[in-house]
Image (cartoon, rainbow, N blue to C red):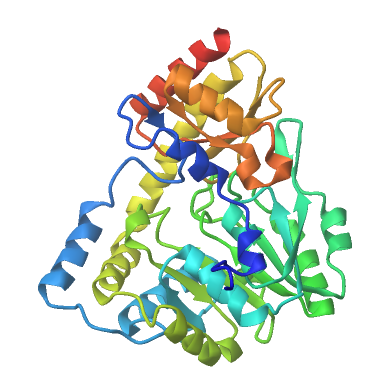
Length: 387
């Protein structure tokens, strides 16, 4: 008999260390959780009500593979205003989440044996998706220096060789909050053009910035017709719609027809009533996004100040996102430390090694919570470290 096992590439995937830690205390009411990238507030009422109306109207049937005309039109208007240049519906495809968008983008352009470069540390899904497709993945690590996260642009350029098929940049970055400087985009795009490298922007945190701008620098602002540039995004973060599972892609027109085929063979389409809620989020939600950004900026200041007051803690400043990525002096096993903090302090954090080997020794705190929850968790952690 043949053993009923998955193929080797699947068996070789790294388990999510975030889930491993979370499973240790799943459902325990005594643990304050900060391990997942999710707000403790629900989706705002105006979006929920739009989804409920669509359900009441019976919008429960299949939709177009690429998304409803209503949502794609709303996305075109939104993106054109955000990035200061037209982005037509002929370049927009709706996906069943941000991670689904990343998977579809990789399926469209990555073949077995291809070489993929990723700026790290990074959300583990970004690294593992190309490996599911039997590609090889190389990371170019950010560095913490002078209280900030920085990318060595020369190192990235050296990694972008003629045999590179795809580059993925998550900016603002999960877990560090690093944001790609606007002045670095042109050089990276030029190198990708030179060697025909697909440039994928994982833009899920682009609205969550702390420098006064409404959005982080985007390659969509520079890309020309014919460029191998794909933007992947989600409704999860800026509109607090994690459970709705809806995202989108901005693609070269040449990829739209094959992307429709890929969508058919992956999920067929996104739910109509969810797309209706998302269209309302885009049309009516700009003031709400600004509120979210202000709340996160205040939460960042609260959490970073408290962490830096704790003995032996290093906490570089994030430029965007919803995370504090910090380390405790002497930590060499972030999974073990995260589990110890759960048991001794009742605080759930994500271990840094979940974001790659370069994250070992670090911990991630999602601060997208009400101030009182962050304060209670910080008090518990301070007590643990003091002991």
